[in-house]
Image (cartoon, rainbow, N blue to C red; front, top):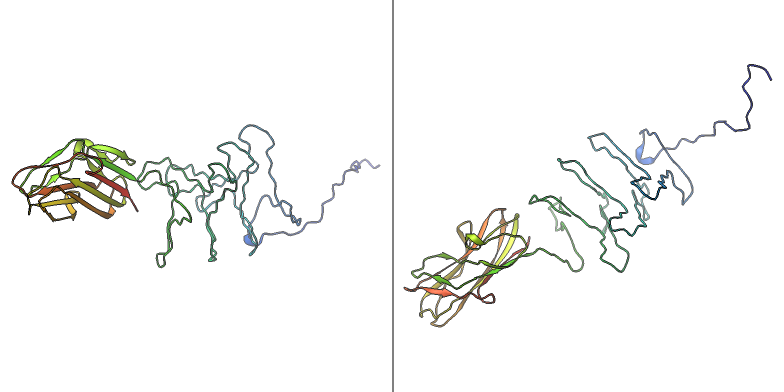
Length: 318
């Protein structure tokens, strides 16, 4: 062997044939790692974290770009079949295990933990699709949670961008369970109402249900709107004694001191109840809703304090 010749080795270090492979959806782009395979069940790139403890990651993608940068992106280019841009699966039975988890850690800005988009106009397509396949347990196809206290924060939010049709922001096929729907209150004691059609606030200070924690009991039982939206108000007032025949009695619903619904009745000379309801559209956070009443006799009369006949209920309906 000549002194200037390198030692021979049994290891094959020849350069294999290469094939110019380029994803059709990224024509002209560059990459640091590219995996391609022709096997039907193969994996182009596989990341596997084998430790059984710790916060290991099979694949971790990071981007520093502020302009639609993507840490990890998956694209399914086939125009048919049950394909996935990104698919996540977990075999764990722990409570916080997740097939795919998205988290936006920025403390400001319009950020998304998960953002799903579909360009298809076919029925039943979805930007994000969640399915819980197990027939038992309290499972969720999609679960949304927010820790924010702002009035427009939401665990899950649906928006209709095109208002030309009748699309629904959120559509449910089946029963919808809602834990926080409204409130109910009644009088804690009989309330005396002055005569001469003097308008008085009905003091609903015995609060039975208040999912919104919005009944201001010290302020005569008024309801303060917790979040913008549409609210349905229903009230019943039962008089404790007979009003003279021909006496007017007028229950009313007020918002911020202005009457928005009123019923004008004339007594027939026997004990009666007044009922009134109305849906209040487009209320704003901080609006104050209360029930008021007036009666036209020359003397006082009372509203009976009983939950079943003198009450107000308020439900958020939109």
